[in-house]
Length: 161
Ligand code: COA
Image (cartoon, rainbow, N blue to C red; front, side):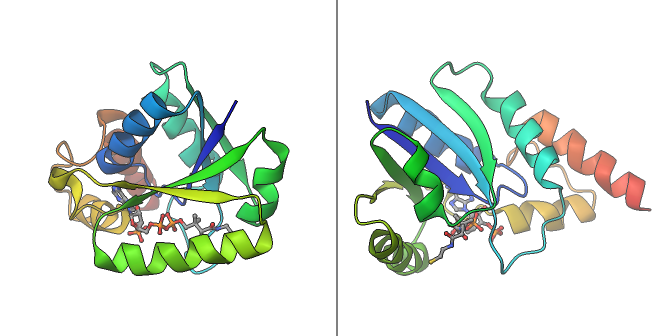
């Protein structure tokens, strides 16, 4: 069995990520959505908060599991049966960045292939940082994230004030 790993910061998970998850889960038997560390980012939500939110919004899909890791992705993947990495591509910037990341991960773990799924047209502009900014201005997030995520961001920002 192939195990697909969809890694990301997911700060927070968006409808764009969920679109990739739904489509990947139709292709692969097992899909692990994994919250992993991007050393260049200082997330707003704690890692356990991001994991719990993802669990809530993927709970209806039996093929999807949620996990987290502080390891290099190339090492983390080794624990799974026939692992492959899934990444979404929104535009040419993602393509350039992700093809380099895929090559780097393959250098670190020669067995590890990366599969790209094109983002659906309606989500090509979407990013977690845009969602965080909108949340800070109290904007309506219903077109960008599930309600549980919008509520969690709202609560987080209220607690900060
Ligand atoms: N819909 C909506 N948003 C999307 C998206 C989609 N389909 N695809 C990507 N994005 C957004 C993400 O939310 C993120 O937004 P942000 O920058 O505003 O937070 C942005 O596009 C970039 O996404 P991505 O390239 O997947 O970055 P990431 O930070 O989410 O994930 C890791 C990068 C965590 C997978 C990568 O750093 C990693 O593998 N870390 C582990 C350590 C490691 O192995 N490092 C590599 C050593 S060479």
